[in-house]
Amino acid sequence: MSATDESLVFATRGEGDLAGVVTLTLNRPRQFNALSEAMLDALQHALDAIANDASARVVVLAAAGAAFCAGHDLKEMRAEPSLDYYRRLFNQCTRVMMTMQRMPQPVIARVHGIATAAGCQLVAMCDLAVAASAARFAVSGINVGLFCATPGVALSRNLSRKQAMEMLLTGDFIDAETARERGLVNRVVPMERLDAEVAALCASILAKPAAAVAAGKGLFYRQLETGIEAAYQMAGQTMACNMMDDCALEGVQAFIEKRAPDWAKS
Image (cartoon, rainbow, N blue to C red; front, side, top):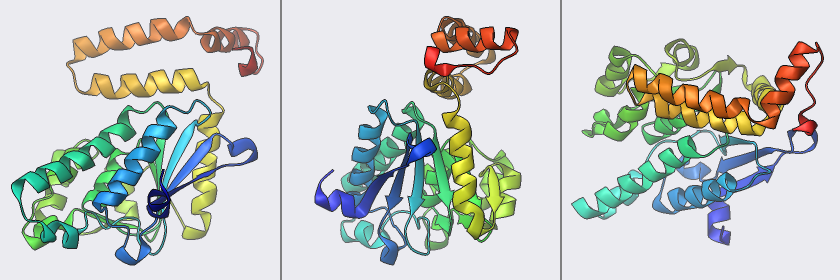
C-alpha cells in the first residue's frame, strides 16, 4: 500500500501463537471511519495482498476512534451527484465486500462502537464478529431518504427477513446483545475483554489446518447460493478432496490412535 493507503487502513501482524493473524484497522476516527473512496481503495489493496499471503491465516477487521464504521462518506457522495459516479462507488464497495467473502482466510469483525449503514454491512459480510457490549448497529440510510439496499443484501443473509426489513425500514439501532440474538454477531463481551475474546477466537482457528479452513469457507458460501441437491453435490466433492489432504489423513489417524494430531506432518 502507498503511504496514503497506510494512513487510512493500517495492517499489523500478531506475534507468537497469533503470528498468523493480520489486523486491518480503519483509520479515519474523526470521520467515524466513514468509507471514502480512498479508504475503500486502501481496504481493497490490503485484502488482496492478504488473500495471496500463505502466512496470513486469520484477518481481524478493527477500527480506530469511537466508532467502528459509520458507512459511506455522505459529504463525499453529495459532492458529485451523478448516476455514473454512484454506480462506480457502490460497485467499488461491493468488490471489497465480496473480496472478504471469497478470500481463503476467515475474517473477524472486532466491533467496539457503532456500525451503521455500510459499516453494518461490513460486519455482516465478515465471517465472524465479536462485539463490545456497548456496540450498536443500524442501517440508517432510510433516515436521510436513502434505503440501504446494498447493506440489505448482507443483512438479509444474517438475520431473518422480517428482522432485516425492520432494521432497513426504520433505521433504528439495535444493541449488541440483540445483534447476537439475531445472528449479526457471534459473541458479545465487555469492552475490556474484547481483544482477549477476539484473540481466543483467532487461536481456535489457527489450531486448525489452513487447507481445511480455506476449503470449508469457500464451500460454505457457494452452497448457500444454490439448491439443496446441488449444495450436497458440491459439499460431497469438497469433503472427498479434503479427505485426500495430508491434514485430514493425519487428523483421522490421530483420532483412531487416540492422540493429538501433529499438523506439522501435513
